[in-house]
Amino acid sequence: MKKKRVRLYLQRLIGNLFGGSFASYINSTHGLELDELRQYQTGDDLKSVDWKTTSRIGRLHVRLKLVDKRATIFFIIDKSRSEKFGSFYHTKEDIIAKLLSLLVYAASETGNEIGFLAFTDRIEQYIPPKTGENEAFKNMKKVLTDEPSSHSTDINAALTFLHKKVQSPSLIFILSDFFAPHNYERSLKAISYRHEVIPVIVSDKRESCIPKARGYLTVRDVETHCNKTISTTEALHVPAPFYALLRKLAISCITIHTDEDEGIWIKKISEFFDKRIRRGGRIKK
Image (tube, rainbow, N blue to C red):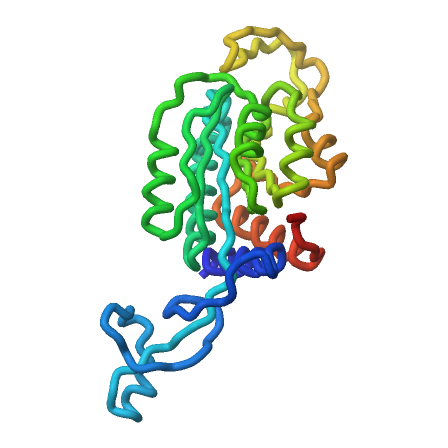
């Protein structure tokens, strides 16, 4: 039920962002609003049968619903080695996989075109947008299971590639911890001008906050393998520079922590979509 709420909010957001950009509403046995009843035709989903009307008239009838206007939705997935870190029950990679499954479920139900871009410090995989829920989940599984060829991160490479590749207004989710060279301000600004960009930041609290203790702690960068010794005499709080950049570019984001459960993710995502809908405005064409 909670997952369906995310799907409903996402479809409302799409209608808000892309009003007038895409094809008109289409009739389907799957959708958000009841449009009309018609007699059953071969191939119709039996789940859509309206049994009350069928018993009254004596012939099978199905409910036709209005399907929200279709949009192109891209998921940019960070496959760098830093995603394998997690100090709680799950790694960031685990969380990204579950979040991606939730968002693909929400996005693919009503005929939206779903595309994927996996990256490290290079483009690992690009799958052009296609319709169909089964197709979306098949492509998602491929993106998640294929091993990357690199361990480093370059968000600028991913944004630059997609900006050149995709011309029509789209909704773009970026799933990453955003631990990367801070070289992507220009490409992020360019892509957010044309598209609606939603960063989904997956974070572990131990990456930015270490409690006070006596002694020293040796830490290792999982991407570069460089070691560094830090003093724990004072509590360590490291501000994340990408939040300042997102504020500067007026890009709202969703932050998910590895110690949170699915109920909290769904609440955060639903509330984010709701606020974005209330804010209004359409993307530039």
